[in-house]
Image (cartoon, rainbow, N blue to C red):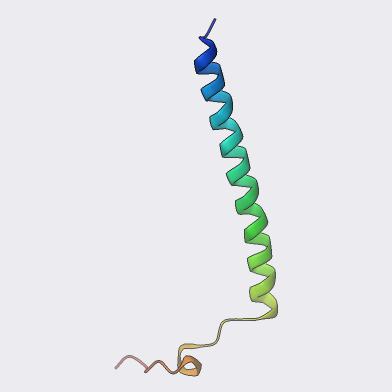
Length: 52
């Protein structure tokens, strides 16, 4: 049987991993939807010179 501290640490890491994964998926969906509705301007539209 594993030590209680190790189980608590493992549970905390698993919860943290799940939370980060869920947040990443949520942000990815919303950023993709936002970029779909508001595409980034091309370099020449942002005032950046073209490379030689």
